[in-house]
Length: 232
Image 1 (tube, rainbow, N blue to C red):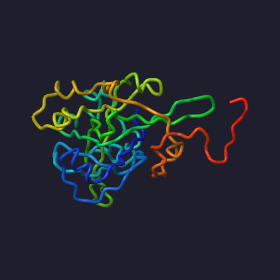
Image 2 (image 1 turned 120 degrees about the vertical axis):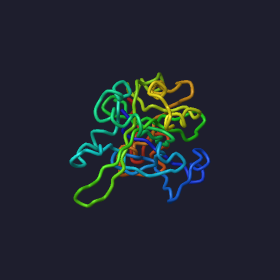
Image 3 (image 1 turned 180 degrees about the horizontal axis):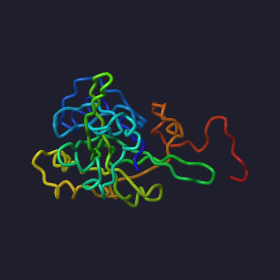
């Protein structure tokens, strides 16, 4: 599962890294949660950074209720399972990021960890997107989901799944119009663990309402107001 990630890069950094146009202001997002709006690059607009809601609403849905249950799509079944099999052929996207979070049970606590690339660059997840029309308001809502795969050895001590991170040189292939199913399917695998690292982060990330630099900072040994026990 991928239920939280970050994209704390400037507009200029994103334009340079992904070779895209950005027509709107870009806010630093330290703690992106489902149902929030965040950056995507779709196969239909490969040279533009757009902002879609995280949580897929298929075009044929009656209402928004599917969104929270479709923040992820499993790579093992994305070509067979409804609704993903209907959009994986021609509605793929890149989801820019600079790290993702998972939680590990440690004693009585769930400790958040952040996973990054060694080079600290922004990267992208393999995603799928769709557009849903709100019949009550007439508004068109663009949404997306992130594809997940089995965890590599960096992520596995914390969680058994991880988002599909695309190699930089293969990003354009994922959103190419003339790509084959076998080509896209070959991209849906765990990222090279040797190119990643992780660390425990500040518990500020536990609250999805927080969007501050603390969310991606290393966890302190002690938090303000806490005291050390002689038995720790």
